[in-house]
Amino acid sequence: MHLFIDTTEKESFDIALIDDERVIKKKRIKSIRQHSEKLLKSIDALLLSAKSSLKDIQGIIAVKGPGSFTSLRIGIATANALAFALGVGIAGVDKTDEWSKIVSSADLIFKKQKKNLNIVIPEYGREPDIT
Image (cartoon, rainbow, N blue to C red):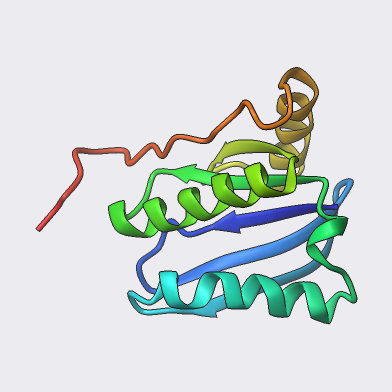
């Protein structure tokens, strides 16, 4: 089972549990500039609702962009930290990809990488707007 994280938007984020090409559970969380407060709690709740735990996660798929600077940093940092802590692979995918392409490209990335040696780097799509 893979954990999918998409924090490209300022107003909400998406998380999902994916097994092969089937979405087990998917949740959109309203989170107006509160991603850092809600992301880990939401992942925990999603796993509980699927009667799963972090031990069941075999890989993490993170949307790497384009998107909001701060939102992306929160999601990517969380995804990288979870992948490292769990000892699983991580794959970065584009926001515009379809589900089937997301899963197949993630599987390819997982097969090529060595565990704990890969990270996802955000792609903002423009210069960061830091104020």
